Length: 97
View: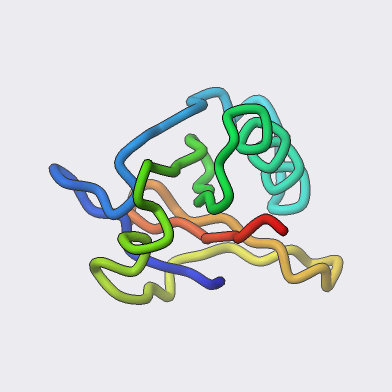
């Protein structure tokens, strides 16, 4: 979906469903990690930054609440995977099939 802002106190994707993302390294590993967690919770859309996996009950309608961001790190492998930079309140959003 792309790189979006996920600002507090009312985050665009309000549910941090995993905060152990720092246990993996790089956009591809973060994508795989959050994707597996999102599937286990039944989420169809999720966001990832370098610290958390994000989603919410109305994620499809709220992920772009604050607009796009340029603060995402992209995979060097050309996979198209990325993650947001938590310090800037950004996340990269994915939609599961």
